[in-house]
Image (cartoon, helix red, strand yellow):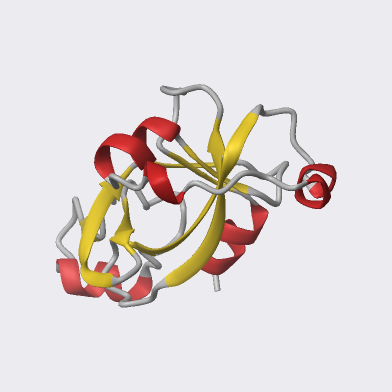
Length: 140
């Protein structure tokens, strides 16, 4: 079976509908794209991002380039206060945070709200990193 975004295609005689009804396309092994709400005041503007997953972290991260150029929301990045910084359990250098709704592109219709830590590096090697909390949302 080959998984393409949220559709699955079988390489056997079974129909695609039969295969997909048994397969969970929302699992991270199949998820190659998520949409992130660009403007929290406008529910109609979503932007695509490629997710990565980090089983060793509870936090979610987003690239500053994605926030600035794709979501055009650099003015909505909030600085970390001392309490947030001390609670942050990561070695990644963090610029600030942004709260956003996002949804997997799998046809489930589910939306989630997550606090994303914004990378200090402008163009890291990821768009979005979902930690254990985000992974649990996808696998339930």
